Image (cartoon, rainbow, N blue to C red; front, side, top):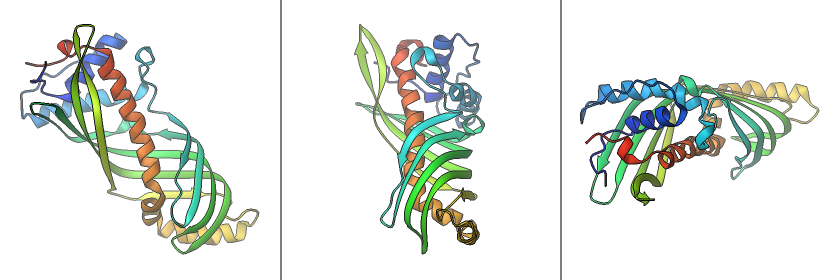
Length: 242
């Protein structure tokens, strides 16, 4: 068992170096050295973003998501053919690791500017605005902070110990602003679409709070999937600081 692994990002570095053959500098951080940890994490962000096909970790920038149901109580919204970019430019404000007798608790904050392009189909109301459209959706999220927390357990496979993400959760907040553009909000009525767009431009952050959560969750789920592939590929003995 590897109860004294100090940092999640160190694991990422070892996994990436061993699986992709890339030369990745690893900062061996002391326990509690937050500055060292954040520096190590920052160096790894663009490497994880490009993906590692050899272990099943796909590209996160661009990230392709076939379908998201972002419907709410007042609106039916389905987005298809999503393309998310900007992940390689994310920063890591904070990261931590806590261990007890049964599990490791890993926490990582990720701050990003992301761009989302998709096709959409929407019927209902956004705030007080009636909408009925089917066309192109463009979203820019500036300084979105995603806080991810996971419980990770040791698992033994073929005589070696690996890390398994047992369960995870996240929260998010938009620290700056959002831009939203939905073309043809009223099917075949560009005049009404333009009028509604002007109102939506003034309320973009509030609108993102309404239908943004499923989109942010889908993006986070893809990132976690890459992390699971990393943990599943390299024995913990090749990664930990004792």
